[in-house]
Image 1 (cartoon, rainbow, N blue to C red):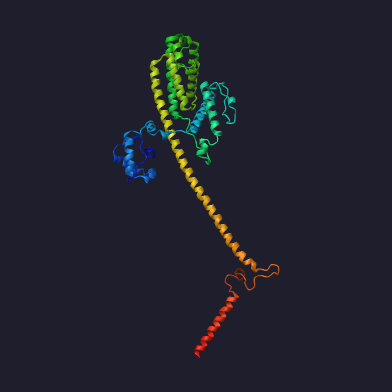
Image 2: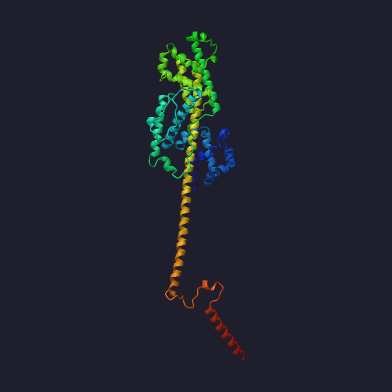
Length: 418
């Protein structure tokens, strides 16, 4: 009976780091086979269970369906591979919430804000006393409260997923969340959006309040910082479209404050999570809608789509890595249990052998002790132990018997000669 082909999920997980970039365009069996052959060391577990030709037979259709090219396609094909446990979801939510608070502190400190200082929360502290500063939006405050509450509930629940999965682990597994962009990309992105918004605000002012530009001698978009425009727009809110403000679905002041935070983040080089960057871009889009700048709205929309795709890809990559780690830790835990079982068996064997040796000693002593008369101070007559005589000292009785036998032999020999 022919052995079944390997599971597609196992092949994908084993080969995804091999079939990447240019290698994802391979289609011929020969090229696929050669590449797998060059990476046998990385695939030894898979090739130990399945023939090389069988592995190639599974890889080829995955390449043709472009599964290796996109984690989105892979997630649609193998959703269970990217599954996240409730415990992991809670940890991520709490990590992102804490990151949001930390970022708000850093932005405020860098900009010299007088915002209420915020500190990391002790897990034992009451959530009602959480010191949330005004740099955080109301939605973010609710998110923090919910995430921390969920984390505390899971942490104190008997048999929580993290406790059940690795009860004996000695150190915490580092989290891959929240998601961050490479800083150079973050900086260029935020500076670009800042410039785009400054240009849009200036063009809006040229049409609606040219007098302000003239009075302050602002001759170009670069002459006005982004942090200056929120106050001007608030003071001239009557010039803004009420219908446009209503359509954005959030207070105008929240959008304008977000633009100030965006500028401070970029200028003071504060590292922020991808989620906060997406929030900045969403608020930038809201401001452009209020200013009715369709040209720059389209530019920003393209940028938002690209950022969303990139962040989603990072999420899927991290989900896959954490899923693989969880599987490996389960395997390690199973191996550790086997080793613990062998260790316990070895210890038990030692104790049993020691008990057996004690039994032999007990039997010997119980046979020997009755030969002694302790009251009269006498040992066993004519039965000195070998330890008393010494190992090589002959037994007197045995020596006497040997002499008699030798004497008799000599006499019989002499009689025969006569």
